[in-house]
Image (cartoon, rainbow, N blue to C red; front, side, top):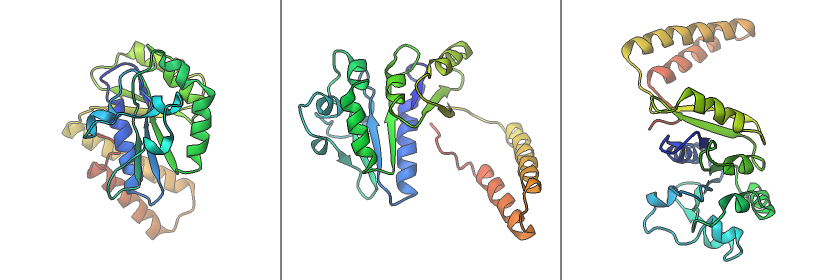
Length: 219
């Protein structure tokens, strides 16, 4: 997970995604703070952890001594640790590749919070070892030119999509989009064979999710 610049909410999105995945399944989920330049996840943990990803990659400790567990969830957190002198060297190292390979065998999903992709290459380096990049933009803050630059900076893997953070909607937006969504659902159901009762149920669930504002991430 990355963004075009600072203060766009990528770490909040990363945490929300990790919590949502952990709550929706009994499978283990890991949130890795790989923003070694400006760690954020550790600020939500008390007491603040002293060991993390940096110490693991530099061989100063083992992974089991750094993992934190969120009570009553399937979520583990790997903090960033001490900011190193040159983060991109660690994040593009064979040591991280080996670590991620090991963690893939232990976790169903791994969410990696990385630095903004426009000023730094860290996110693209980590992307080469990941299944894809999720780009976070902030409504009213992210400039279109920077967003385009961020998209073009993803060269090592596929771009999974974009999260528009901090967006607000008025009543007109809700009504217009609800009508659009209903038309889209009807179009999809007409293209495939679905029993009438199941189709009506599916349409009702999709619209209910929208109207109740069950967003994956909301800042």
